[in-house]
View 1: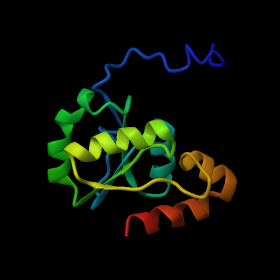
View 2: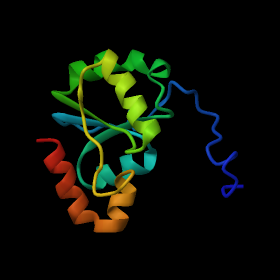
View 3: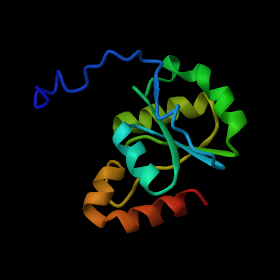
View 4: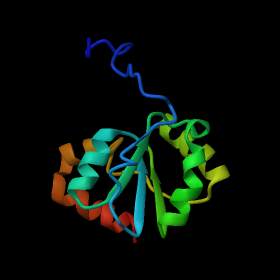
Length: 130
């Protein structure tokens, strides 16, 4: 059923659940990304990251004030596509935090790693957080 796009993202987790929240490491920087897959890769690179179950801010924004108090810098990194850019714009209207998109003709971190490799991806992220 994973090949059926209508069934791929079924879950029994509430939309307010934030992936990676319980596993957050001590850090000055936090990356809010799109997927658990991105969290796992960012964790390999020693970056603290979380991901909401969806890009709709209304489902998980009650967690943001405590995150803003905990981390020196928060970076939003949703997908580099129309939906991701629209969600980023809505997010930034309410919470003016830092944001970046994965460039190089890639939609997300996984695409970038596939195209350029893990080391270049890590360098890219470090440069984005400067």
